[in-house]
Length: 336
Image (tube, rainbow, N blue to C red; front, side):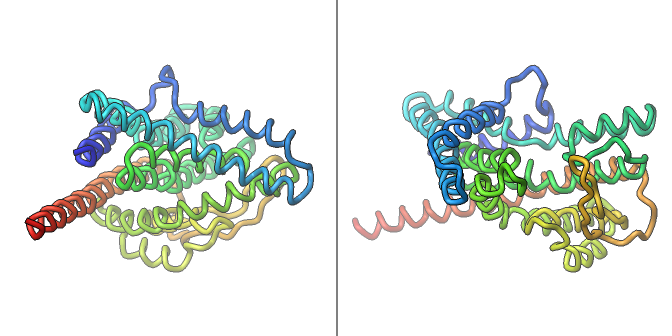
């Protein structure tokens, strides 16, 4: 019965996210995870020696500690609630599933960039896009700002929507929190700089592992969604096959390649981070110049991919639950 409650909670949370998004006044659980990571990092750096081996060991402990607690707390809470007050358990899990998804907020934040590009100044556009990207934005022109926004929508379709949805359909909010913990650790300590080169190794590697399947599923579903939404799905598939590894990360370019192909534009390329130029290969072909409306077009692909993923993942989960139920009943019947 709990498995059915969880399925319903994920679907309900998905719908609420599409409607409400993430209000700024609502305290987000990722902030709690982030504060925990910062605290654990300070403690572990004091405990472990400041050597290559010591920092890598500290990073492994960080991953085990943060991921374990992030999954264990909701698992224990929900298990107790479903056992004693199932309706409250369902409501709590629904709320958590809603908070773990970012479809509406991704659309809203990138739409703020669209609004500034269309009605504001280049300075306000740069500021708006700086809220959702990690690169330096102070010297970007309008096309650079637009490209950064579209790339963010493409990449975060997987990281912020499809991946957490995938894990929640497997193990409910507990799995969703575990994924978010790993993803947050990677964004906080998974850098290849002097400070985190060794300490962040475990977090970065684990993030690559947990995103391996979701990134590829996201790309395939996005190709299908782009065709349904009226975009060039044939070119999306071609660019995906050609450019999906044009990134330092083994997962990040998958949905970017699909987005670039579907919109017939070129993404990625060199970018500045913290005052240093990072040379990166292009993704896609410049069949036309990127334009402001491509941000809105990326939203259509984002929403189409999210809804299709819910339908596909939900159908698979229900099919598995039915198969398990039939197997159990058949086993009981044969034993009688």
